[in-house]
Amino acid sequence: MISLILSLTFVSGCWDNSEVNEIAIELAWGIDKAENKKIMISAQAILPMRISGGQESISGESKNKPFFVVSGNGMNTLDAVQQMQTKLSRQVFRGHRRVIVIGESMARQGVKEVFDTYTRDPNLKLRTDIFIVRGGTAKNFLEKSYPLENISALGVLGEYGQMGTPVEMGLLNFLHAATSDGACPVVPAIAIGMDTKSQDQDNQNEQTNSDKEGFRLAGAGIFNKDLKLVGYLNAEESRAMQWVTGNLNKLTVPATIPHEGGNVSIILYRMHSKIQPDIQSGKLKILVTLTGKGAIRENNTRLDLTQTNNISVVQNALEHHVEEAVLRTITKVQKKYGTDVFGFSSTIKRKNLTLWKSIRNDWEEEFREAEISVNANITVRRIGVTGPALQLKASEIEK
Image (cartoon, one colour):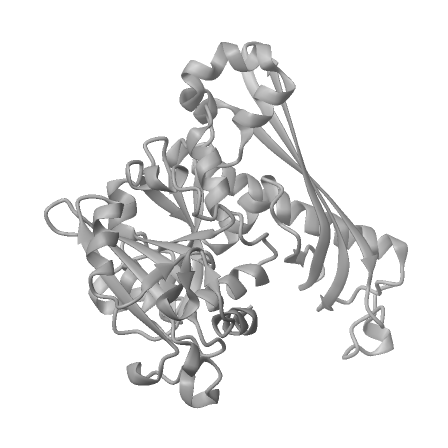
């Protein structure tokens, strides 16, 4: 991606009515709360001559970073952009924007008005990912270096992709949920610093985090229908939510095997989700069926997995673990936040429009009180190159 951008910067001619040597190429965009009810907009733009400078170019020293960050404050987005542009000798080009980040304070205040411009400007890409900076500001995140990538914006996309989730769809999904009848947006969260000890805390100290290097994925931020951040899911809960919504392509699932004193791990692929709503005795019931196929990649039990009966034991344990974890996540969202981030409302509307019309006006309460159950169906397709664990003696293996 970077090589393509760089090659374009040296092509003569016009680009979006501007000469290429007269534009600043933006890769990431930040939105923060500012004083006096204003908004701060920050842009992370690349410095092409420093991109290919090797290890020296990606050191933590500001003078060696292959990008720079510029900000502006204003009463709304365009006013802030105008203030930001006065600090630049080149016009900002947003055709290669990959990431939008929102500071936590801004997210908790609400972003309903902020996103108006994103639905009006035909030049803005909807295939862009969006993140919440948990316990920090967007500007602070954009200023950070990342050890494995020249540009921090590309680093966070890489981390998100490693989770097995589709990239470059975040903004489109956010706007779709924001304008739907019952669904609420959910946005992946990033936290500054590599330390995971405090990642489950909803309120982290922004000043403390500003001094840390690097960043990490830290679950997901939940928004209500007013587009205000109301809380977070941790990393495990976030993956469970993504599976329910059908937005997960791979997942490692560990499980303890009862009566075996050990555990196994499976890498799942071909993952699917099916949601079946129904009304029974006047009560809304929803059955979530999760399926996945995968390969055993760790076996710390006495079981010989070449035996069919032992495979069944492992599959049952994995299914039980998944059902408990996903149901726990759904129940947390139901009772604590009351926001439908799973898309249940959309499924009901699509499958039973008459039912949806009868409950749409009280959907938040219906969602809180719905009886939801989870059924998992895990299929072990491969067990690796050996059946039992290698460290076991023949007498210790359970056939």
